[in-house]
Amino acid sequence: MDNQRRRLIDRPVVSSSDAADLTSVRPEEWPPYYIAHVFCCVNERPPRHKRGCCAGKGSRQLCDYMCRRAMAMGMKNIRINHAGCLNRCELGPTMVIYPHGVWYTYSSEADVEEILARYIMKGTPVERLLLRPDEGPRH
Ligand code: FES
Image (cartoon, rainbow, N blue to C red):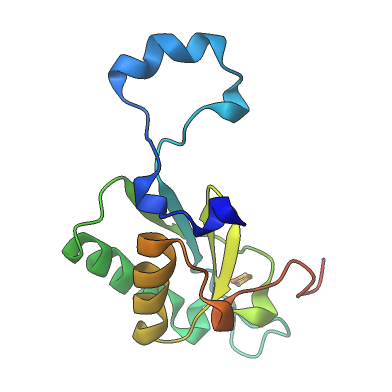
């Protein structure tokens, strides 16, 4: 838990001068290329699909908002990507943030602001938006 509470933005990232040192380190121990890599599901399904979809709940607009806000907040070395279905559709909109693989559900710009300001900037999980590993169907 201490690792998750560390500020993500304080994590070391790979620089070109590190490249030679990495040859003696196992790949799974390499520092991340991005300090935080966010994948927002923007999958779209037909209306009334039994699983619903994140795009139908505004995920594309909220993901784009997150990108703009991260840039405006001066966050460097993070990446926010549109993603296909993350297979937790009923709980969406969903996002997963690496390197820790922390999942969130969100539905407003205020939720996005809180995830950026508290989790990515300070390393403090936003408890009310977390998706637990045991939530959601495993299809
Ligand atoms: S449609 Fe977003 S998780 Fe499946």
